[in-house]
Length: 230
Image (cartoon, rainbow, N blue to C red; front, side, top):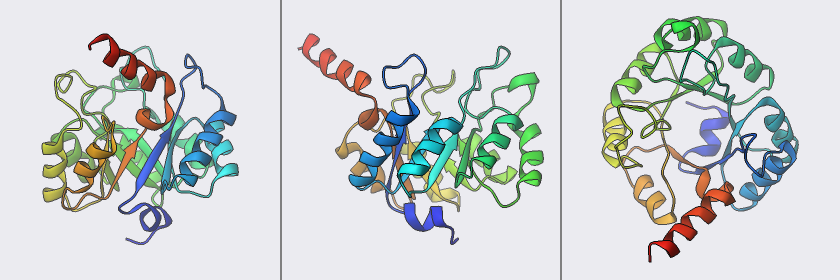
C-alpha cells in the first residue's frame, strides 16, 4: 500500500481546513493560510472543501489532500460529495483522496451509494476514495463497494447515530479489528487527550481534527459555554 497519501499520513494528524459560506473565515485565501499553519504545526495532511479552497491550499502547502465538495440538493440530506458531478470536479483538482458520504441515506435522485459508487470506481480506477461512514454496516458496505479508506466522519450526524457520544471509540476499535483497510478516525476529537486515546487504538491509521483547530467561532462558543455553566 504505497501511495503518497498513505506514506505521508500513516500515524499522523490530518487537519480539516473548512469554512462554510455563512462562517466568518469563509475564504480560499484564509483556508490556505490555515493549511500553512497546520503544516508548520506538524500536520501530515489536509482535508479541504471546494475546488477553489483546494487550489489555494495546493499552492501553499505540499501535503496530501483529502478533497470534498459540500453541496446541498433539495431531495437529499447527503451533502458531502453527493454525485458524480462533484467527483469529476475533485478529480480535475488532482486531490490525493476524494471523500464521499457513504451512509445508507438516499442521495440526489433517490439513489444509494451502492447504486452510484460502482460507476465512479469504474470511471476512476486509480483514484483513492474515502468512505465517510456513520455506522459499522456503512463501513462494511463501503469496503465491499471498493472504497480505499474508511472514516468515521458521519457518526453522530445521522438520525440513527445522533445520540451517540463521539468519537465512538467502540466503533473505531471494531473497524480497526475487523476491516483490513486504513481506518481514519474523524469527528468529535476536541482535545489532544482524546486524540491520544483514539490513536492508541490498535490498527488505527490516522485521525482528522477540524473544528478544534480551525474553527475559532466554534472554539470560542465552547469556552463561553464553560463560563456560563460554571
